Image 1 (tube, rainbow over the protein chains, first blue to last red):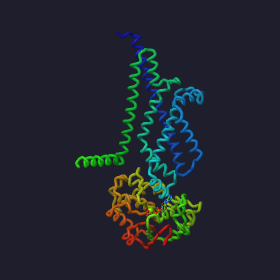
Image 2 (cartoon, chains in turn purple, green; image 1 turned 180 degrees about the horizontal axis):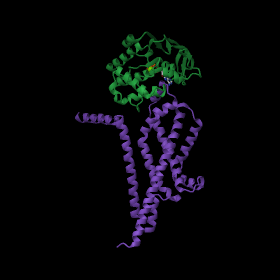
Image 3 (tube, rainbow over the protein chains, first blue to last red; image 1 turned 135 degrees about the vertical axis):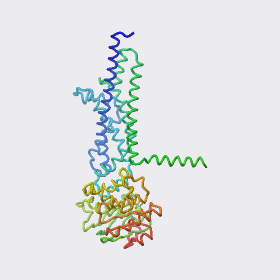
Image 4 (cartoon, rainbow over the protein chains, first blue to last red; image 1 turned 90 degrees about the vertical axis):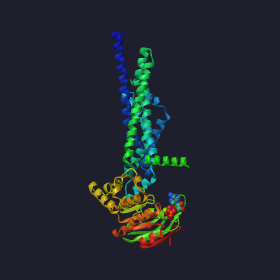
Length: 244
Length: 216
Ligand SMILES: Nc1ncnc2c1ncn2[C@@H]1O[C@H](COP(=O)(O)OP(=O)(O)OP(=O)(O)O)[C@@H](O)[C@H]1O
Ligand SMILES: [Mg+2]
């Protein structure tokens, strides 16, 4: 039988979980925006340097930034931001968003850079032969192709980002993992809160990968799926082999 | 129209590919360059629009030395189209966008006008039904014709062709060759690299042999 007090407690937990859920979503969404924007910027700088040896100084700065981010744990970055660099900033939410945004932007820029490397050089040559300037070739031809090539890796990165944010509890922000941890310590029962939160993470990343897949499909149908043709050909080959 | 004097090109690895090349083309001429593989034909053609930077020499295009640092090479390239062996269409753009991108972004022609011009060219060269397709959905011959139209849409005074039919089977070669033959009536200056003697016979107003970085 439920007492009144128990009911109140229960609704409080729901509220906490919901608050944590919102917190996680907000951090991931805001970090994603920063990371996409900054990641593209860094990749653009590096692409310019690669194609025209311009922006040498900025490129150097970008390389150092990316290497530092990749070479240190994100947990440490978060602590450094919270207790040294952004110690003046009162909002832990902002600290978290800035940290994860910067962190993820380094990875996004690398993903885009390898996407750019995957674009055949003849695309660049053809653009130059038409009379386009470097900037135009990069913006109109190279970058769109690189972005499309990078979609699967970008999904990976954002899915990793979602799970990395689970550590923001250490600077006192209530994300969904932190919420579960609070509930565990008051209820003295770890199973339900952690199971629920695990399911929620799983649901969010499933929805995200579904959306990414849809985007990829959209692009593929717009350009009349190449992959389908290729797989059809290879299936046919397999059939031929079986018939022999 | 194009006047090349004492052109030399040595690659960074010390490979001397062009050795004192002198070359002149007049307006509306169609010059075919042929010669064995490795003679430096492609390198020469790329030097004409500075896709490769010559080591020394002068290249006059419409009386202007394009090797001078004051010369805006992008503007020169807009007037000197190029068609490659491997078609090199922009794979993220539809056929229509491939053709209109240059006119819209470089010549600042209104989109509607550029689109109409593209429609007309596509109709004229018999690939109007592919307007909204993407490059990989076209046959090699069709892609190469689109590449030629893409160059034409910029209203160039000269077009450089680097083995435009070498990557194609016989039927497609004929299609593309016919397209190039049709261009002769437009008075556009052409420099063509090809190994095809029949095509050379049909199209050339002058044939130049190239061997080991020299014109014979
Ligand atoms: N980027 C480069 N660096 C060094 N050497 C090069 C480079 N590009 C071409 N070469 C060399 O220059 C020479 C001429 O090459 P080029 O491509 O101009 O020949 P080609 O006459 O067009 O031959 P093909 O008929 O096979 O196309 C070759 O020996 C090649 O190895
Ligand atoms: Mg060649």
